Image 1 (cartoon, helix red, strand yellow):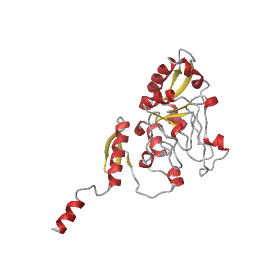
Image 2: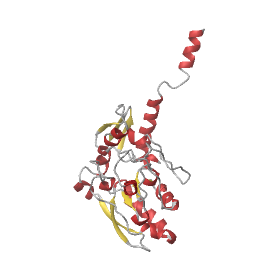
Image 3: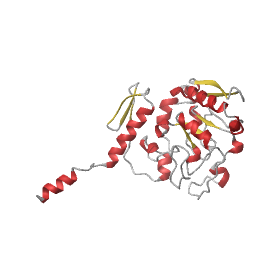
Image 4: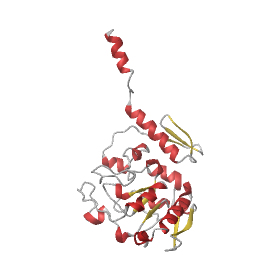
Length: 252
């Protein structure tokens, strides 16, 4: 009777919570980018051209190793706090800052030339600013940014934060690293630097271990509009970058 009770308890709960989380993350990333994948199961992402990628490499990593050599699942592990009701994140909490470069190269282009072939021009805030920007057509990012632009164009009290755009497409590394910037893929936009804060500017160092004091001047009204269309905001990282928005629907 005692043995039967033990077996009942064991089979009443999930045996491996990590495997369950991995499967949930795998399905979420496939739902976020349905046009790219034909198979998302058993720790494998299968792209429409037949390419297969391991989702979770099952390796234990410290923070620096996660930044430098993440698997695809690593970029899903830190929840992104959507909306305006959030607390400034603590050290080690940088949702969206972890990126598997191979994954994004496969999706947007493996070289500067390949990315450029998929770029198009949009007009940012056509009623008020009329700024031409180059962005990717992959995942309809250009249409999503046009929709964001249209909404923001109706809010003149926000215009000062949206002019003097810091950049969209730019094939380059992140400052102080060997990691490719997400600007390289044309799915990112930096808004007005005048009203932005970035941890390296404020702390005057590239030291990842420094204790930071969070600063932000960007209205949450802007953030919520971007989030509605699948963009995350760098102001919700411990290593904050409040000008920065990138298309990452798998985190929302």
